[in-house]
Amino acid sequence: MRSRSDARVDSMTRIISGAAGGSTLTSVDGNGTRPTTDRVKEALFSSLESYNVVHGAHVLDLYAGSGSLGVESASRGAASVDLVESADRAAAVAQRNADLVNRVLGWTAVRVHRTKVETYLDRVAPDITWDLVLMDPPYTVREDGVLAVLAALESRLSEGAVVVVERSARSPEPAWPAWLERFSDKKYGETRLWFLEPAVP
Image (cartoon, rainbow, N blue to C red; front, top):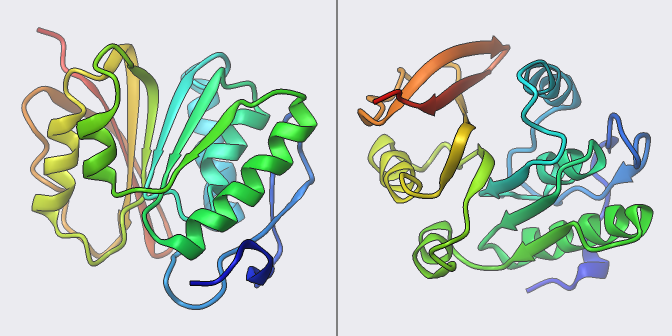
C-alpha cells in the first residue's frame, strides 16, 4: 500500500469552477484508475447545472477514484459529498483532494469512505438519501454489477434526483431497471454518459 504522500500528479487535472475553481488536483498514478478528463467533466457539470441539481445537493460519488467529480460538486455548491472508493491508493488520493476543497470551503463538505460500493450502500444509515449520484465504475465491472448497484439505490434517491453512469462509448446501453428512466445520453470520444431519473409512477 502506498501512503498519501506517494501520490503524484500524472496530468493536470483541476477543479473547473466554483469556490475552489482552478485548484490543481492530485491524480492516482499508474493504470489502476481511469480519470474523467477535464473536457468530459466540464461538459458533465454544464449539463447538471442546466438541470439545477448541483447547488445544495447531497451527492454520492461511487467508484470515486481520485474524487475529481465529487470535489467538483462541492466546489460548485453541493451541500454534502460522499466519495466511495475501495482501492487504498485511490482512496488516499481522494482524501487529499477532499482535504483541499474542504480547506477552501472552511468546513467538511466532502467525506471519503474507503470501502466497496456494495458494502457502503448496505451499511449506510437507511434514512440517508441523495439528490445526485455519479457512477464511474471500472470497465471491468460488467452490466450485472452496474445494475446491482442501481438496485441498491432504489430507496435512496430524493424526489427529482439524477443518476449519471459513465461507461465506455463502445459498451451497449445497459438494460436499466424499470424504476429508472434514461432522459439523456452524451458521447465524448471514448466516454458515454447516461443520465437517469426515477420513473414517474
